[in-house]
Length: 391
Image (cartoon, rainbow, N blue to C red):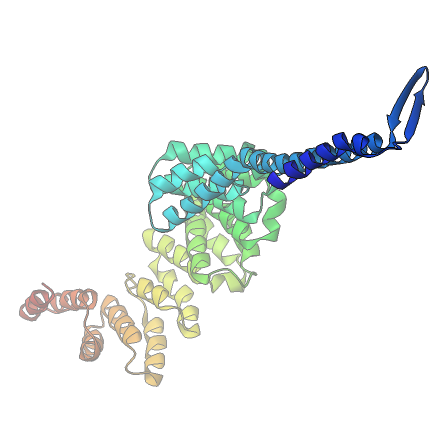
């Protein structure tokens, strides 16, 4: 800046002294309409140089000012967005370390301007759910439904998360509303179908849940344990509805009308045998159970059927014994044989099975059943010793 001022002063000095130093100054006549201007050549040159210098200084000043102003305006315009992004990032970190109160507060402050409205609202809703603050969770979900930015980026995951939060807060009507408004998406994602089934079961709409399960069963990405659980709950609810509306024979007829694959499903069979057991139709249990025993049912299924009061279970006992011939030290099947024989009042075989089992493994549940067996056999002293061992 100092150099520019110095050059400018030198030019002024030269311009002012030039007319005195030059003898033949020369003149320039400028005529504009009725006005005439007369200048020496030197004066004109000096004026042009001064004009260029002043123009250069003005351009330089404007350029510096514009740069400064641009930075300032950018800070003014985007400072709130940058702060929102920073709050969003801090909120994510707070949620990950379990500081749900801080995470919820930061998400509330950043949701509108962070550029990730869906994610911020969902994390805020989840954080408030973790804090058992139902009102705030509901408020976040309402904002998710009404916010324009959130709706622009609405996705399967957003729908799924919102529905699960409503389900967790027992807002079944709101969860159903979300699903109905986006019913066209249900057939494109198995997770949404699973959510629809969950909501239907809670609404006690068991037949729609059963129909949805038939479609979902074809999907290879579904967790089988979840599928069995939904089948058990949906079919149990439907069986109870049939009994209330008609009688237990309607349940038998409904089960007989199922496909062969459905009759081999553990969740459906468990629901059916529990219904039969509750209404004293234990003579029908064995016919349903044997195909699954032969197929090699899951441990959870076997552990649930071995405690059923089946007084006529000889065919099931024979099926288990055939399995034990191939694998005589299998703890699960030894326990199953012992329980089935005890319920069938085949005490000697039950005792031998329990003794073979206890040489490999002992647990409180099997010991309690063995103690009951000893009581039934009149071995009260031994039964007492077994009870003492459990205690």
